[in-house]
Image (cartoon, rainbow, N blue to C red):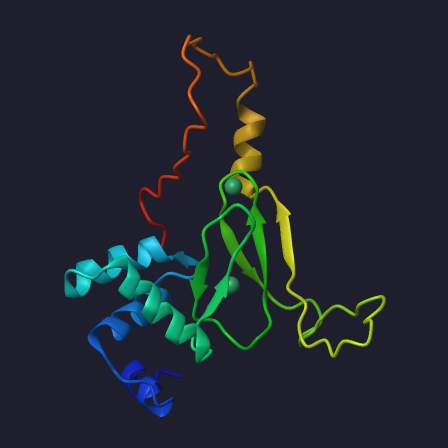
Length: 170
Ligand SMILES: [Zn+2]
Ligand SMILES: [Zn+2]
């Protein structure tokens, strides 16, 4: 099923722009990609693009159900082009790696609510949280000796933790 992304956009009545195409390609090439990473990929492909333009393009594509947005707790939003199959996600608490897992039942809403309170339920968003094999192996190898802390007199506020995405896995 190889459809030209430009045709896909046209079929949905979405104006085809180089930016939207590049954003779509970035999401297709890397499942569960963040907006920041999309911006990076798009810049490499077509040159300068503002983060806002990336968000705009992602918003249009999400609204048209061409891509899906997931937002695991504590993580920036992630985007994928695997849509419509009600698949779920396995998320590593340690490194944040996200992988797809097929729908437990095969179709939405997958899980039956114990009480629907009269709602017409069409989806259950399932996230399985745990530790990925790499992180499990890592914690097994290194004996934890407690973090060494350097005491500093000035109390600094919460230091922003930055997750480094070095070396992208295909
Ligand atoms: Zn992990
Ligand atoms: Zn997924």
